[in-house]
Image (cartoon, rainbow, N blue to C red; front, side, top):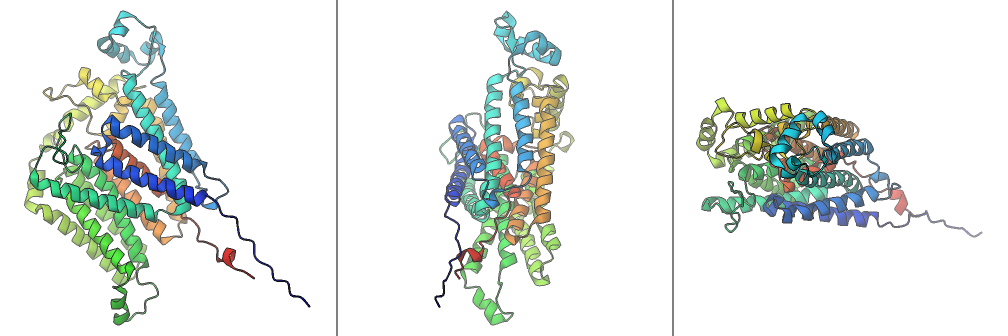
Length: 484
């Protein structure tokens, strides 16, 4: 009798993983470009970022839906919320009859009468609600491209996994930290010792302002800590509980990678503290506390938990001790806290502008134009930013933008919470912890600074949102490779 042997069907190869890998590599290149090109603060730097972010987003949302890992629950709802924000922003640049503008935003008519000669001369019967439509166009295009990047990253990382992305960001962060540390002793007012910022500033590393450098590190460092925790949680699996076996494990590539990642976090933390940015140092301390809390709640073995907490404590002591406790104390003591370190006046002006434009705002990205008319404090300097991005959004967008922005936040938070509840991958859990911690740290800093107005920082923010939203890809089914 003849025995017939059947071969199990193997799914045909697909280009989706290859495309996803290429797109992820492009994202990493964009993160590096956004950091080292002065934070992408100039048009020649941020327009390439916008194109790259939009391209990756389109690729990400276009990958075949049949890929199980590409199905990210809640992503459509978030896409809808962000689309509402874009539509609301677009309403600010739609030309409306002047009579309609006077009804929707009476103060806008007054502002335009002092800013736009054509408006005064009656050259046109229509005008957008934004007092500087060109600026609003730029901000809206950047937001739309980064919104696409969030969606695209969430799906692409659900296909390829987020670990390689986190490792690449850690490498960029170390290079960025070294660039800043090496430059600091020279105390030059030039970026890279060559470029004098057009609008002035306090350069630190490749960034025009040390607070913006701190903002990048507040996102990159917690993600690297999450990566390290993921490595520690899987360390020595399968190693026998004998000292000889454990010592032998220290010579393995896994142990070397843990040591390198741990060293990377020290370099990044030291570079952040050396900025002496009060908001940056405060947010870093909060990020370390959040990470420690997650380690304790994860319920590792006593020895592993104690080692991780001890490591975080040493990281805190070394990072802040490197800059000098007396220097840091002096930095905080010298702040004029009755004026909230010179922020109180800026916040009062922002609240005044938002009260004048309650429904539609002055227009996205127009705060610097509005302060030409409405700034009342520190008149020796012109404030382009409110030094609080939440108040600035309220001033620029009014209720029109504040409502969809709040909706985006709520939808995002719910989606991430669902990911944590249903997480089965240890690595994905810790990378998500790192991403969310980075988002929380930068959210705290934004109450005193405006780091996310740097396009390079905003791009990293979008990537962290994608990591927080992604679903860990399923492990390959060995049955597909089996033959009968």
